[in-house]
Image (cartoon, rainbow over all chains, first blue to last red; front, side, top):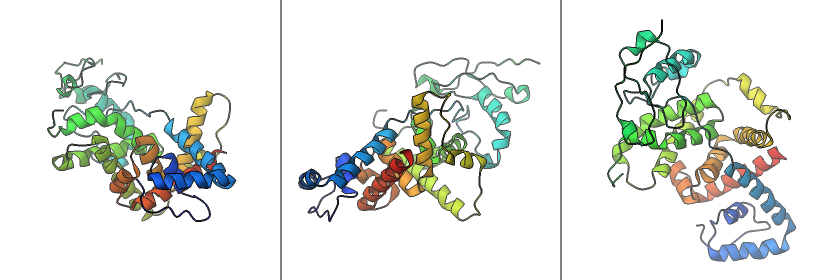
Length: 144
Length: 163
C-alpha cells in the first residue's frame, strides 16, 4: 500500500495505476476519487490504463512442448544452449527420448537410436505430479 | 509440500509452466523464454537452500526477473543484433486468418515486447504474475514509487501502441 499524505499535483498520473491496483491507502483513495470527480483528463487516462491493464491480464498462458528438464534432472540443454538453437532439432529429439514430459505436453516420437540406449523413457503420463518425479525405466525401441 | 523445502525437481515440475509463461511475456519469444527458464532453473537449484517457505511464485518471479534483467544488461554491453523477427514484430499484424482473440493477444504481446525492459518487467510482474507493488519492489530491488511509475508508464505506452 502506498502511504503518506496524498499530494497529487495537477493530475493523478501514476496514482491512477495504484488506484486500479488497489495500492492506495484509504485516505489517498478518497482524495483520488475527489480529483477524478472533477477532472475529465484523469478520468480519460484512467480508462486508458485500465484498458491496457485488462489486455495484459487476459493474455492466455503460454506453454511450450519442449521438456524443461531431462531424466537426469538437469535443466535441458544446459551447456552451450545459447549457441545450440540451430541444433534444436537434435536436442529436441534427445530430450524427447529421455524426457520427463510436463503433463500438458504432447508425446514426441524419439528418433535418435544411438543416444537412446543409455536412457530410460517415460511411456505414459500420469496425473499425479509426485509419481512423475521418479523416472520410469521403460525400454524404448527405435526403428532402423 | 509439508513445510519442508521442496526439491528443485518438484519446483520444475510444479512451477515450470508458470515460469515459462512469465519468461515468454518477458522475452516475447519462445527461444529466449526457453533459455530464460533453463537459467532460472539452474539458479533455483543453486538457491533452493535459501528459499524461505512462503510465496514460491514470488520467489520464482524474482529469480526469473533477475535472469532476464541480467541478460538485458549483458546484451546492452554488446553491439545490437537486429533479428529478423524483431522487424516482423514491429509491423502491424495483418488482419484475416487468425481468430480475433488470438490476433488481439498477438497485438498485446507485440506491444508488450516493444516496451522498455524495465517497464515491461514491472507490468508483467503486476498484471501477468499478480504481485503487489511491494513484492515487485522486493523482486526487482527498486523503490515502490518507481514500481508504480514504471507500471503506469508501461500501461500508457501499451495503450498508445494498441490504439
